Length: 90
Image (cartoon, rainbow, N blue to C red; front, side, top):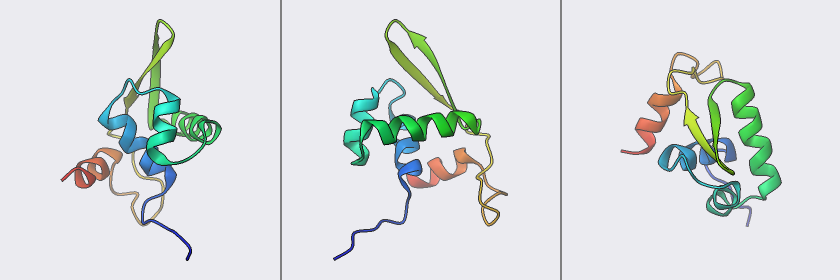
């Protein structure tokens, strides 16, 4: 049977980072159930879209989610990333 979920891997990565901004890529990949390479690609795309940024502290990345960023699909573009994350954590 085909396994599917309502949320994409992008949403899962974003939720994981929002819950713990100091997670390593390896930890995020394990939580989401995807490869480290796929996780790095998603993080890079989220950063390019302005949804996420990071700073270096030693060898670690500390991520910051930009809650004010609008959602990208036209059906949800009137909502923000912060609203989505708030809804998912209820």
